Length: 515
Image (cartoon, rainbow, N blue to C red; front, top):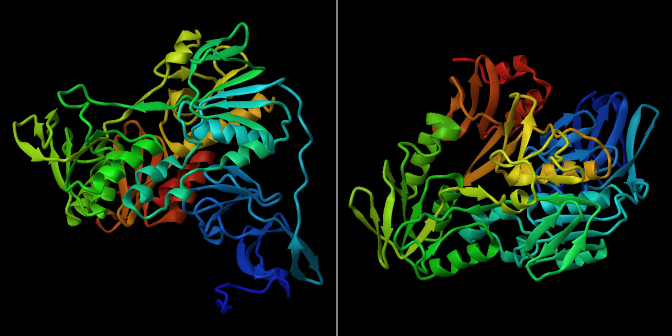
């Protein structure tokens, strides 16, 4: 049955469908009471939830069932079929939960119902979260979702409420997303949930023996459990002119606003660095009508992460839109109207953006005496060397079961998922952090999704055509698949993520065969 005047698709579940039409492990898209509804069958039990992802509106019916959850094909948010809860970021809000009635061989969706509320949890006595980015915000929300009723204090150095940081270099910077989309929540959200969010509050010291934190204003806050989620700071090159007013970095909404304001009058932009954020900025500024040059020391953009095939495809896409690359070079100085390259050449520039990476903000953890190893060392439960102190996000270096090594990953979704797991472990769940890392990157109208973690590889296998952004690329080492990147193949990315979780090399090889 096709879509009607309302745009709804599939059968009317209020009228019922044959149980035989809902196969074991299958998803059926339909509607009830004027809303899109997804019906799924798992081990002879039938569930019904809202069919639209609460993150960016992805179609859950095109997603993947994994146990009693469904994963969104766009950014891999995970929803529980039994409760409708968003159990895995980047979605934070639940989908609607619907009542199902199975009788006389038919399935009926009767109406929405409220999931059972969790039992209230009173311990620890209080939770303090240092950092109000992806990990900190996700942790605060998860604490309340899990029933924690004690005081939660979230101290964020940024004067803004937590924002959708990936959008700062993508649609918002390009002018395709209004600013009201950028805050993750408003202050009223935190007030309603009794989360004491204090934006613009920088923590100066942590006393692990007294179990207190002290702000730079001298305010002391006691904690029963502490989560460090201080994130990272963008690198600003130490070159002449790096502190000029038209030279920018991008991490916060204020910095994105500043770039947008400068872009209103600028004509020529130079982006220093062919990183993901650098290239997303290049695409966004190009979309705004600026002439854009990208300067980077590597021979091919993003080759270190995505390999040569996707690196070439991304470069060709940018060049087709007018972006000019100056590879194998660096910027040696910035002037009022130009930048000077290491070759001696000059590029006109009235806007410069440095996208040369970030450094984890470790100073607080170091001064507090926590174990440090190129990040804050945590165990599989994201607990640091000091009991009761947890770390998540860009600063956390955790034991990765798939590689057998400690890794630190600077991705938004990873930070959110770690914040969620840390919150549950603060409440005593003893849940191992084992999520497969995931990130996505947008370039003009093309997107790339990446699951897994491959710091190095000895072979790359490609299925499809990277040049047309219709492909899956596997990064392998010693016969094992470490990561898979996809373009235009969302479902393959979901299947690869689930296979990496299971350690299912046979499925991974079937998804991206060896060349």
